Length: 252
Image 1: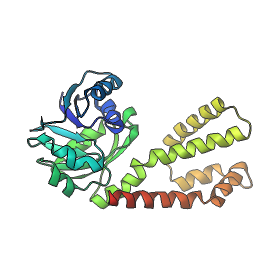
Image 2 (image 1 turned 30 degrees about the vertical axis):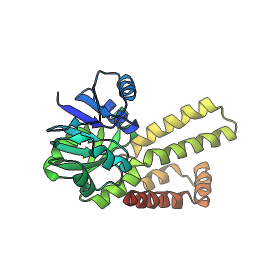
Image 3 (image 1 turned 90 degrees about the vertical axis):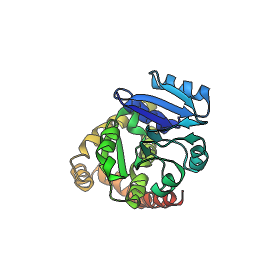
Image 4 (image 1 turned 60 degrees about the vertical axis):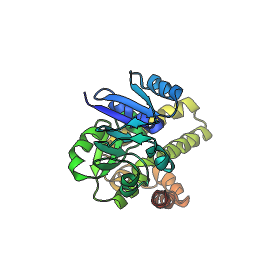
């Protein structure tokens, strides 16, 4: 199996590694041996573990999973020239990556936490000679979409990268609403999870507007609840969330 070298051992690195571990050898590079050992334990398979200082990246396939603010610091601790660098860093441009990390090619990627269950929606852009490899690699953790430029991947970051947090808020709020009306918390959680599971399948083949119209009967319960969401400016808040997250991505 091919080897993927993770630079960084945080939550996103672990989520991606969980999706890749059956098809790739994993090695991970970090600052702290105890945290690297914890990464290995959480992953559930043996990995090659290395400390960051003077790590040789020559001819390696790298997955950069550090915080955007740490790119310069991390790059100073590496030596050699990588075969290709796949970056999951939000808002970190290809130019900045090339200026700081020595690699023959760079591809920006934006997976999300669903990578751990192989359901990530991952967007990609960068060196087109690695397009097919990138789609195969990140396709191991879910769906992929190659985008034409970095502006598009920054927008996609706001939608798919940050999206699980937005949906988690909706899920929690709907569950709280059911509890408020008298449903047991455990039952509300089971119903909410079933709702999201079924909706995930439906939305693959239906436009959201048609899905909504199929549920909403005249003067019915859905219409009453939907009107409350519109009165609460939920639609506008979601649109604003994408705008704010996109602008933040361009500032990183």
